[in-house]
Amino acid sequence: MEFALLFRQPSFDYSKASKEEMQALTKKWQDWSGSIAAQGKLSGNGIRLATAGKVLKAGGIITDGPFVEIREMLGSFIIVKADSLEEATTLAHGCPALGQGGSVEIRPIFG
Image (cartoon, rainbow, N blue to C red; front, side, top):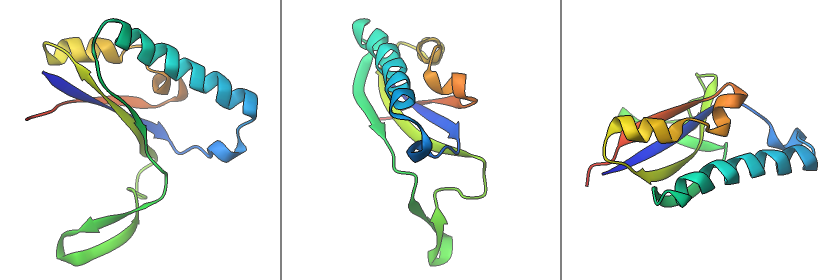
């Protein structure tokens, strides 16, 4: 089975981070996702999402997005292979987003 690990983080302006802070954060993400890949459980590379976008709602209503009414934003995601939701949840432990006040949403992919 495949699962999407969706990384939600508090709004953060990466343009204000120093080069050293960005390098340290990038290394944390690479180390964590590398450990999943080393187990043969990484199905898709991480995809970082831009912070700007639009949200289309029923009735053709378009708003600036994404999800401006909440404090967390969906920052990126990866696809992992696991035998169960519990195993996919275990793989999510250690995610750098957790250390920044964020969360990881684990969702099965139907296909």
